[in-house]
Image 1 (cartoon, rainbow, N blue to C red):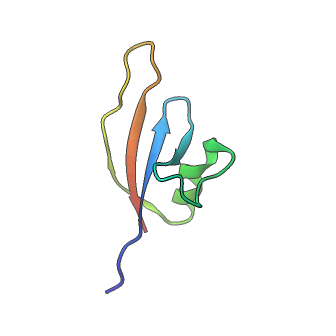
Image 2: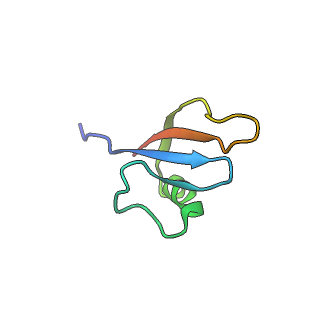
Image 3: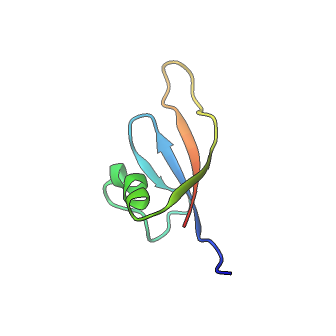
Length: 66
């Protein structure tokens, strides 16, 4: 059985997303990392509750695998 590849992605409520590890999958355009990975066949495994207060930016940690 092949092992799954996993990646942790940080997503903000402003639409930006980037790799937690800052790995080579990171894009100069932060708006495209998560949509790009999902389009490439990655699947969401889990999402943490959002952080931040009413007037602050919220962030979610998304675990994806392929």
